[in-house]
Length: 194
Ligand SMILES: [Zn+2]
Image (tube, rainbow, N blue to C red; front, side, top):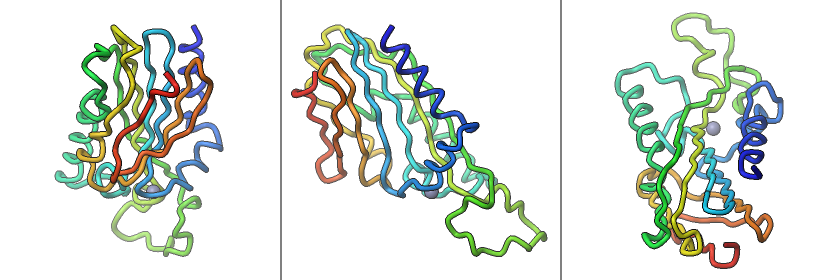
């Protein structure tokens, strides 16, 4: 039940209705994603937040066929967690649940480029362009031998060339531990926390 509580909490925190989430979108750093991992018994819950800039290279609203196709392709890739976060075969993990979505921030006023011209009402829809976007995905894995989950290889960086770093938090029996996994060394060592 602990796992379900964690998921419920993170879902709550991700709700656009919370001001905190708006601030998080507004203040995210391009190139840096966030991955929360909760290990509970044989199950691993993961939640990824990554700037649109990292995943598709842009954060404006996709309108062209090419941009829409990029977003759709990214969502398909993000729905295959074991291709992005590769676990040892010996851990025998399967995907129980995987979902990915694109979250956008629609308010003009939160855009970092606050001095851009908002008075130009001709042409494009500025509401669609403003602010930041993030890809958000949630995964649930079931592992046949959780003790073999000693590391996770971040093929994520291969899939998404604009991604430079992922800030990882792992919650397990050992408590919460923070890691930074970078493109240069795309391996998360779980031996001390699992
Ligand atoms: Zn951004």
